[in-house]
Image (cartoon, rainbow, N blue to C red; front, side, top):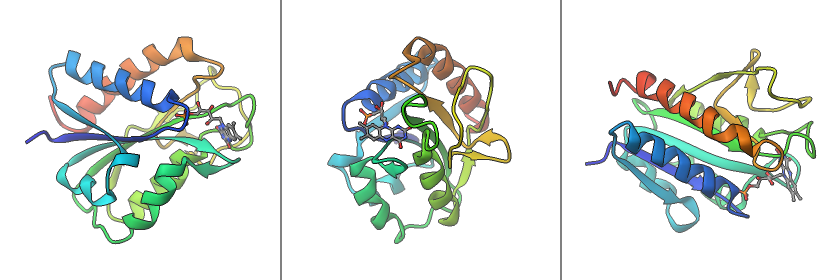
Amino acid sequence: MTKIGLFFGSTTDNTATVADIVVEKFEDAGFEISLTDIGDAEASDLMAFDYLIIGSSTWNVGELQDDWDIAYEELDDLDFSGKKVALFGVGDQFGYGDNYCDAIGILGTKFRELGAELVGSRDVDDSYDFYTSRGVENGRWLGLALDEDNQDELTDDRVTEWVMQLVGEFDLD
Ligand SMILES: Cc1cc2nc3c(=O)[nH]c(=O)nc-3n(C[C@H](O)[C@H](O)[C@H](O)COP(=O)(O)O)c2cc1C
């Protein structure tokens, strides 16, 4: 059975594009990974995986992407104890600098409450230019923050580094 499951929610396909890049990087590194649009799945489908990668854009000023908004309610019935969860977010830091990639924080808080161990946290380095985000905790991103609207040229390198980090934190190597 594939052990890594990537579930994403995407309204205008930016998060879907990033999800494809994440999959490509894991496959290049020799790992099998399953890709699912959460809009076509049930939250309970997440339970099939020990290692989860969760991607969501942020919409409506600080809200989850619509499909994750629906799945979010269903998560409460599930127990993620023993599972490792890595989050990535796609947002617009220049247009929504007070809520940039809030979805990372909304989902990260939820998965942790449900017993998951969060992995894949990142530095808030100088390449970012925003004011506040629910995705930042103690000065660090809880996951990987991306910006296809303003910094798509940085995505490939950011994802490459993050996937290498996850291979280590998932204990896959
Ligand atoms: C009405 C509207 C509200 C948005 N709100 C936010 C927001 O609060 N935070 C953020 O980081 N990005 C926000 N965005 C930007 C989207 O998250 C961004 O365009 C993202 O790439 C969309 O990804 P998707 O196509 O995968 O859904 C918003 C965009 C629109 C049009």
